[in-house]
Length: 278
Image (cartoon, rainbow, N blue to C red; front, top):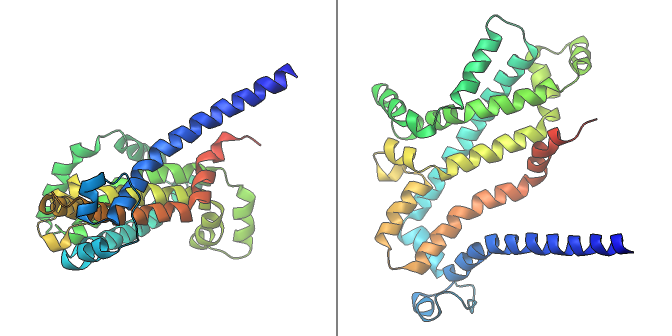
């Protein structure tokens, strides 16, 4: 009886603590959404602490249409989608090659990718900018190539560890059925490492979506800027219009939250795959 009571009390304390942490994390997001539905006069009266009386979308309409915030949103969606596709294709092919193919210098090349992970990200901004400027790739194409390069090292390392765990019998069976190396990668390898792909997709999508410093460095034209750089410009113009800023921030946060909700099972499986044995 004593141990059962102790276990129940421990669980209650633990869940109470976790619930308080979760509420402290989600409250700013809910407050932001609530303010985005208010008028500026209503916000000045209660600082957003009271619930909005109605779901007024006028702030979103003004931000998207009149302030042309839709341009930044579309740019970020395009940059994120294209960059993540490139990273998934290149890193999965490279990881499959490092795991399943034997060629001279394989380990040395792989360790070079691991060494690249130890270099601080801001340390590479100046060389990246100089290289892109020399080849005339600033703005759209240059940003996609730079963000693809940034996400490759960790993605290759993560996917290689999953490819290493796949039984060689599956590869031998596919080869007997007449599959080539590319077909084995596509039809056998990728479906079996889907949890790791979910981690790679969410991790890199978050990086590209939230990148600010490199975007401000590469983009010279306002119409090409992604969301975070455009959000800074928008905030500077609307410094006293808090409800409009909250509406813009809500639109900036919502896509990446929806992506995580859509792929949360694969993300959790990918993070916990190495935590169990057998």
